[in-house]
Length: 423
Length: 165
Ligand SMILES: Cc1cc2nc3c(=O)[nH]c(=O)nc-3n(C[C@H](O)[C@H](O)[C@H](O)COP(=O)(O)O)c2cc1C
Ligand code: SF4
Ligand code: FES
Image (cartoon, rainbow over all chains, first blue to last red; front, side, top):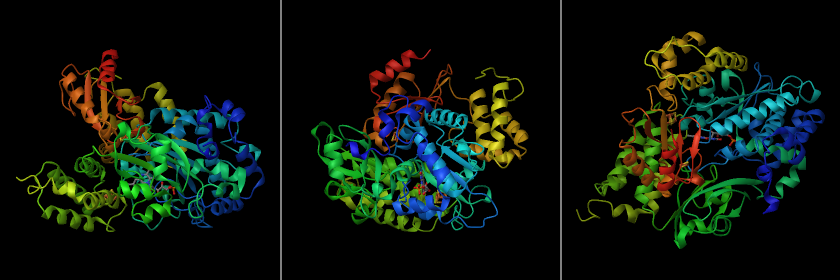
């Protein structure tokens, strides 16, 4: 799969995280950023990224170039660029690899994005647990400063860019962009109501563009090779390649770079070596734990792009593909997830704070064979009360697994009721 | 990490003072250095005590209540003393599908404590944590702030525990 290596190209090069290796042996090598900063207009960079159709890789799939266009023209405060490297979505482990193996390509992408936005300051919000990633990134930043690629007047131009690592401290909700902004400001990671969107009022009251690590790391390729080259990968509406992190019951879990639109079935059986131990596929969560689960049938029909997964009733999300074989107890699996969301709700909104707990309680009741028929409706009622009424999307994220599991695997849940167990 | 019960007055070590001074210009106000400052002191003292919070409040010129709110929000900012080795087992789905429950059960048996407890000699604290972004090499656990152990088996756990001084 040589042709697909836009993001992973440098991962196999030993010590690509060292600037000398990155400059001599890796793609881009800061020459793409140099070309952009010394010869292009910021508006032309923004337009290129927009035309390339690069969509956010953090979960929502919003087009990066369009988001950049939301920064007000005559804002009184300078714009911040924020790299969301919080990577907390269960089943997702790609940004950590980018930072550990190829931090310079990410920084190069941030320089280009920073220039496009004329941002004087960039933050990289790295999940607190990721010690090695934070050290590699900090070291790479120090090297880039020393080389004159960061700091005052980069590449000998009038554009200056400061770059700062800000480490999180353990809270899933800080991956949500407004929670992340609260956290950068030194506060609890409580999300904020939108609008105003961060592009208008973000960190420290200034316009802020929050992009996922993988989104930013995709940018050097686009500026080096152009819109058309980028669009040869992927589909019309989902251009480019994406990192898919496969975990659970496959023979070869791992991080795979694939063009968007790639068949999920091929990913599971060809790329990942099939279901472990000759077992049969039962279910797949295709886009991180917040994406609705697919049955084996649905999974084998789906393609890995934003539109195709919507069509089968799920989401591409973060690209975290969690695979479950026929030995999996779906009630147990859902209980694992409801516990996660109950633990991670920040508690600001009553429907989310109470709802995530009730969901966890009732699913636990199923797990312990204490549930009744009414509990199905109770779960659905709670789900309804939690959707669309809260400050951030964590509440919806908690609802998707519950609704999809109990609808698609209802027979398994039935067996866990008092009635189903004959008790 | 200082372990004596009566630590000297809380303050950044010389090295951390330098790191703190380097941090400040990266933010438009002092409050924003809250989490980085707490990380430095956590490294230095092992947990975020009341005294540590008071010190941060003083250095950042914010009320103590703000520091308290932040420290209690984030799971990594331990407000209580933990054992010399804080073993944090990922319990979330991808790891669970690959056997994290057996790993946890084995650790509980070997250490003679339940998740959330510390051994009487203060050597080990055992906790469960949520997804550590290593789902492809699950089950995983983290020891203290920075050491990941991946693709765990019962044998591997035994080897890890035997290795820790
Ligand atoms: C509860 C929650 C957690 C999130 N966690 C992350 C995360 O860890 N990393 C990330 O990039 N985006 C995460 N997001 C999405 C961000 O809010 C935001 O959409 C994204 O960082 C924008 O970047 P992109 O447009 O490049 O994808 C999360 C969203 C929610 C609601
Ligand atoms: S939806 Fe949940 S996590 Fe999001 S702000 Fe409200 S309570 Fe917090
Ligand atoms: S589920 Fe354990 S590391 Fe992600």
